[in-house]
Amino acid sequence: MNIHLDLSSLRRTRAGEYALRFLFGGSMTAIAGILAERYGPVVGGLFLAFPALFPASATLVEKHVRERKARAGILQTAQGRLAAALEARGTIMGGVALLGFAWAAWRLFPIWNGAAVLILALGIWLALAIAIWRTRRRRFFFRFARRKFRVQR
Image: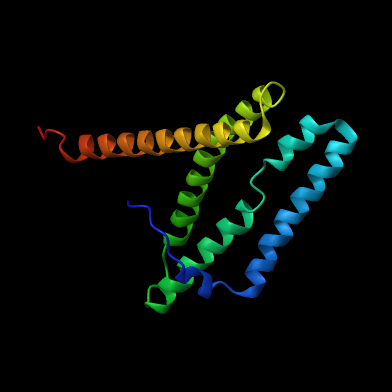
């Protein structure tokens, strides 16, 4: 799978879908603010890091794939659920990389310049994201290769 940018999906997304994403994001931000006020910024920050857009994104991905298959005449398909599962996997990988960003910011903000900390934390996030992506790709390839070329007895 090659990573690419497809801006045509912006035209296919309806206003209501954007509203749903903003509703989820705004709700999670408000909840994080309430928790931060009640229990402190550490707890609030953890909830702010929750991927607020993921629930809306996963359901919209599933819906779009299902609609595209229906237009092609394929009525019974699991492709929508598989696309949502792939979205979930990407969210988890990005969340793990985001933990590296958060750790670097947490440890370095008290002792370094803010701009330098953000640049370094961004570099750590990018390095972790790439490493996680490559590891996942390599594991998938080897699992597929073992299955495909297994010796038949």
